[in-house]
Structure formats: C-alpha cells, structure tokens
Amino acid sequence: MEERLEPNEMIIHLGPQHPMQPGPFRLNLRLKGETVIDADIELGYIHKGIEKILENRTYLQGITIVDRICYLVALVNEECFVGCVEKLLDIEPPERSKYIRVILEELTRIQSHLLGIGEFAEFIGFVSMFMYAIREREEVLSLIDMVTGARVTHSYLKFGGVRNDLPDGFKEKTLPVLKGLKKEIDNFEQMFHTDRIYRERTVGVGVLTADAAKDLGVSGPVLRATGVPFDIRKNEPYLVYEDLDFKVCTETAGDCFARVQVRLNEIRESIYILEQCLDQIPDGPLFPENTLYGRRTPVMRVPAGEVFYRVEDPRGEMGMYMVSDGSDRPYRVKIRGPYYPTLQALPPLIIGTTVADVAAISGSMDGCTSEADR
Image (cartoon, rainbow, N blue to C red):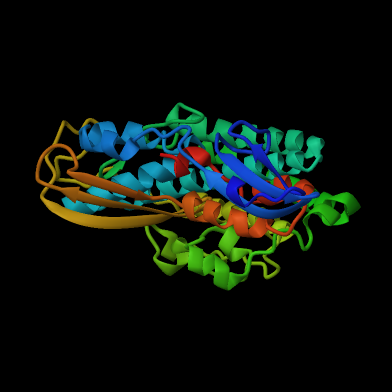
C-alpha cells in the first residue's frame, strides 16, 4: 500500500488494539483527506491453532477446546463439534436433550446480539445504549448459568445428550425475563429509529449488496440484511428447529442500520422460539437408551469416516469438517467460521467512505476476531 502512496495521501493504522475492534486485528487505511481510497486487513495477532489442538486431544477434551473458538457463542461451537462426532458415531440425542440444546443456543444468540448491538452503539457515541443492552444481557447470562453452571465457557453438551437436565423452576424464572426483554427490545428499536444522529450515522452507510455478500461467502445477519433469507435453522434444520415456528429476519438496505435491525428482530424470534420450547419440551432421558453414551462417557474410539456438519451461529454459518481414523482423537478438523468471510467484506465497504464512518461500518459487522483468527 505504501508503494503507491502519493504526496497528498497518508496511511493510518487502526489497531491491532482499538476500541472499535472486537479483538486484535489491524486495519490499514490509505487516505486522501478524510476519504478512504484503499484498505486492507491484517490478522494473526491472536492465532490459537485450535484445529491442531483438537487433533491432539481426545474427542471428549475437544468439547472444552471449542468453547474457546469464540467464547460468546461457546454453546453453538459445542453443538457443531458434538454434532460432527454424533454423526460419526451414528447416534442421535433424545428429544428432551434436543430441546434443551435449542433453549441454550437461542439464549446464546440473544446475549451475543445484545452485546453486539450495545458495542456498536457505543462505537458511534451512543454510550448509554451499551449500558442498557448489557443490563439485559446479564439476565440472559444468569439463565444460562442456572443450567450449565457457567456464564461464558460451559463444556455442557455431551455426545448423545447434555450434561444435566434443566433445573427446577427454570421455566418460571425464564418467562418473566423474556417478557421484560421483549419490552426492552421495543424500547431499543424506538430509540434507534427516532434518534436523528444515530440515523445519520447508519442509514445508507456501508451498503453491502446481496451479490457481493454471496460472492464473499458472507452469512448470518450481515447477509440477511441484504435481503437474502438464508438461515441454516430453516434451510437445513437440525435438532428440533423443523418443529418450531419462526421466521427468517431480513432487511433489504444492506447498510449499518439494516444490520442492527436484523439482530433486533432475531432477538424477538429467539424469544418466540424459547417460549415454544419451554411449552412443549417433552419428558424423557437425556441420552439414548441402551447405549454406552451418557454423562460420564469414558474415553472412546470413534469409527473411521468423515463428516461435515454446520449450524447457525449468531454471526452466520459455523461448520466443521472432521475426519476420524478410528482412534480416540480426530485425525483432521477443519473449521469454517462465520466471521472470516464477513471480515473480507469490510475493506470494500469502507473504500470511498470517510474515516468517521469506519468505526460504524466495522462495528455493524458484529465481529469476533477470536473466531476468525482461531
């Protein structure tokens, strides 16, 4: 980038540590005045080598490792990893365990979106919104803590089921939280729609087209904000999503405003999903009966084979390709996370904008550098 620099241009580096970034990466901007005329991204500051770690740990140890891909969505990461192993083992969790997984993964989606919305608002100067969102997120984290015993990293899913059942009183505790959250989401939406400065900073800013998003492999709310109704929970249902009534939330503008609006609407849909699950969850065992699999499954060998399994992460498509050679640890694990493709869409979006818009556009992507830089 420096080789093409002209006398009236300059280079600035945002990062690798910067308040607008959800983790360390460096955004290099070539400016002419305040206009961005070129941009590129540098990753690698927190590379953890998780794929190789998984190949050198047993399948059971891997459950704890995948929590660290992105701690905000630890339970969804567990679903993807455990789902791969279950396909190799040719086992299926009982209905009750499937419902419990959906409950926890939708609570995960809600708390992730709340944090993303709050952080984005703070990036553009709406600091009070961050406090409002975090307050609601704490209630959701407390519900997850009731079940898993942890707020962030859980090691809760097991091959064929879940570690333990829902605690007594969970439904009675959850429903009032969901009712209050619905009211607060309406309040958030009203504040976003009526605040003149917020609209000026978001409407028509950082427009991503549907064709560009699909070409780059973008998924999740960023894709759906361009009008593409792709959601793995609907397109390739897993667990009990095919038995649940919910809609895929889309917008058409593809700008910062639309990306936040999609997440607000998805929180509403997640609440609706949770209400259905709490109402119709069946009784029954947590693990398939007459099998070796249970809460204290010993170190095991997995039949040789290969599988790809994907789920709908709060940020898009989370997929894992796994190869087993018949030993007690995977021969190969390849992770397809949602944020790396989304990150590739960032430079084209900010070229032609001003420096002031960079924070808004980057923040509206709701990134997790830990996942992209795994």
